[in-house]
Structure formats: structure tokens, C-alpha cells
Image 1 (cartoon, rainbow over the protein chains, first blue to last red):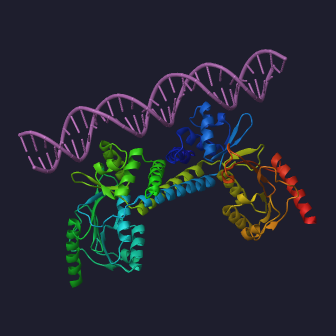
Image 2: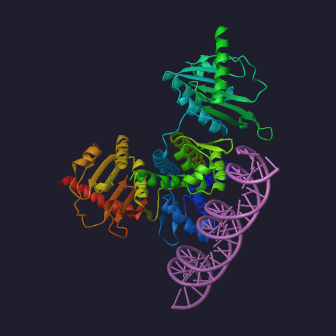
Length: 265
Length: 265
DNA sequence: AAGTATTGTGATTAAATGAGTGAATAGCTG
DNA sequence: CAGCTATTCACTCATTTAATCACAATACTT
């Protein structure tokens, strides 16, 4: 199929453009103009599903956004900016957005974000959990203990561990499945490896993390509904912070015992 | 006023969050949680204008987006991620969006984006015009002739000119108002400067650009309605491409005469 | 030059999304 | 167990957005 790519490309492009704030018609019109390079309202409505009489509004919207130039002739002709320019355009727009947002939020953020927490917070979604893990490791000053299944030791986390190590924190790393692999040594060469004395193989455990003996996180991998391939298994985690936090106390005990035991052997 | 900043910060933060795809309630709830650090539905609805019974939906939305963690107690407590994490989060999200979009658009883009154009395209808005100017200069292989009023020779354009020069294109630069200033030499040291023989002082001219004697752009500065300060004057431009394009022909003639005349003196 | 086709604008209607409100259920506390 | 609060759910109202139609203006054709 020659159109196999385009058949996919068109809806995804429209979807992204809508997510970036364009109306449905504007998104479709822009996609049409990118395909055509240039065209009239008629041309556009023939290529995509936009009523001809609405192409004018859509083109207006696009022009105001700087995505389309207009030739004032009869009939009017519309010209879409190049894909590279469009990319740069949106990048700039959203850099600006995020800058303004973080500035505003920084002003609002209260100083009393205490690290002393009573209970336990839950996080869902693999990316979100990873985000929290990275957060924690980034805040490490002295020690990071991280036990994980192999598939979750991504480059992002590995890099983060390296940075923490450079900062002077000691890294203790273990894998749950096999005995410590050489892969770990490649990814995080400065880490001090240890082996788990328990067998996690029949548990859905994902990661155990402890930072400076003050912040801890536990995650499990949970199958969605059907038997998806392993990569789409969802992850949910709980975390807590502070010396008096129950989860911290438990994991501290667990890891201390674990590490002591390892040193002996 | 102590709250002078926050009074501004809160609405702008909400506005940006909405622009980034959150619902009004979700945006307000997040702002409240950033201010509080942590809180119950009650707390949130007391701080910002969200009905208490709806904080739960909003928090759900935020949790799915990975912006808020939940503590399952009674009452539930919600915890907002740090502003830095939020910034990184959105950056990542939109980098991803833009990547997917440009990929899709590249597949769609027709190869026949000919540089040979019949008519003349119009662009409005200072930023958009600048974008087009940068586009043009970036595509220059041999020669760039750029005549501009001082306020429009921004750093972005200057840098772009330097790059073009490094690529082997000769840069000819002039300012419309005063005789050629030393400022130009600072900004674009490698440019060959020339003086205009005409007096543009009573015209609203903004820029004249010619690239490789094949693409040209003319812009004018136009007052909005009231007497705004000069920086808010809007700009509109027309451009054309191709050896047979009327605008190209005109500007080529103009500049050739201009440059010849300059060399004589 | 007149008629026909096509382009552009505006008004109008219908559908969908989202904001706001209140009632019902579940869970805790005394 | 009673009274309270927290949470969820269902519904209304308003605003926005999609879609259609009718008309005016312009260009093209014979």
C-alpha cells in the first residue's frame, strides 16, 4: 500500500494539532495545505473533510497563529509554512508557555513543602512513577539504594544515578530477577552492587528505592486487562518521606538487613 | 502590597495550564495545591473557586496527567509535584507532541513546493514576519540583501545572518533611518554595509529583503488604532519567490541600482 | 453585455463539551 | 446507633464548536 503511511499520518497530525490548541477545522485545513503546499478553499475542502464555507474561518485562525500565509486573489490562495518552520514555531510557543507557567508557579509555591510526611502517597503510570524516582534520586545527598527489575532501569534513571554519584552520594544497586548482571556495571559503573537474599520471582514487584534513609518508594507492576506484552504492564507506586514515616521505617529496616547480610558473604 | 505578585501569578498560571490542555477546575485545583503543597478537597475549595464536590474530578484528571499524587485516607489528601518537576513534565510532553507532529507532517508534505510563485503572499504579525525573514535568510546560498529599521534587527535575525555568512553567502546590510550605524558592525561584523540613497523617514517602511535574487520580502509597520508605543506597532509583509515573480523583479531592480550607486560613491 | 458559475460572508441551527448544583451513598466519630 | 462528613453520581445550564444554508459579490463565459 502506497498510502499506508499517509493513512496513519493524517489523523495523527490532526490529533496533535488539536492537542496544540487548534480547532478541528483548522487542524484539518493545515494538514490539507501541507499536503497540497498551496491551494484554494475549494482545493482544501476536496482533500479533507471541511465544508468549503468554513475553510475561510479555519484559514483565518491559521493565519493569526502564523501557520499559513494568504494570497489575496480571486479565489484566495493559502500557503502552509514548511514542516520545519512549523516545528520551530510550536517549540517556541510552548517554551514560552512553560516558562511563564513555572515563573507563576514558583511565586505561588509555599516554602512549607516539608519532607516530613505522615502517610503514604500513591502514583500511577509508568512514566509518572519514573518521574518520581528521578525526582528522589536527584535530591540524594548521601546514599541511594535502588532495587529494580531490569526493564525499569532505563537510561534516564541510570544517568540520574551517575549524576547523584558525581555529587558524592553512594549508590547501592541491585536487580530483582537474576543475580547481579554485568549490564548494571556498564550503565552505572560507580555503583556498589548487592544481591537480594529474597526471591522476588513470583511477586509483581517493580522497584524499591530509598534515598538518604529519608525518602522511600515501592512500586509494583500490574497487568492491565488482557495479556499485553510486558512493556505495556502498568505500574503503580507508593512513597513516603520523613524519619517517622511508616514506609520509610519498613524499607530502612529491610535494606539495612539486606545490605549487612550482603557484606558478610 | 505583599500579594501583588501572587495576584498576578495565580490567574496567569491557571491560564497557561488551561492552554496546556487542563480543564478550568483542574487548573485551579493544581494552582491551589501548589500554593498549599498538600491538602484535602476542602482545603482546595477554600483557597480557589472550585466547588468542593468537584475537586475530586479535578484531582483525578491531575493524577492521570501525573501532576498530583493522592493519599488514600479520610479525608483524601492531594499533593502537587514540585514546580521544577512540573516544568520538566510539560516540556517532555510537548517535545513529544511536536516530534510526532513533524514526523506526520513530513510524510504528508508534497515535494512540489516549488520556489516559482506567481503572486504575492501576505503575512501579518511581527513575530510571524520575523519567522518568515529567518526562513528566507536561512535558505540563502549566495547573497542576502537586507534593509531594515533599527528596531527590527533583532538578535535572532543578526545571528541568522552570521550563520548565512559562514555558509558562504555575502551579506549586504543597510539601515533605513540614520546613515549606517556602528551598531550594525557589532551585530553582524562580516556584513558589507551600504547606504540608502532614498529618504524613508516619512514612510512606514519596515524591511526590505532579497535572498539569492530569487526571494523577496517587503514589510511595513502599521499603527494599530490608538497611539501605542512604538513597540506595539503591528507589522504586515508581502513576499514572493521565483525569477518571474513581479515583486522579485521590482526589488531586484531597486537593489541593483541602489548597490551600484553605493559602490560608485 | 448579460447570464451563469463560483467565491466569500454572515446568519442560523444542532451537537458536544464543560461548568455548576444538588441529591444520594458510603464511611467515620462520638 | 445516630449524626456528621466525605465522596460519588446524576442532572441542568451555558458556552463553545461543528455543520448547513442563504445571500451578496465577484469572476468567467458566451
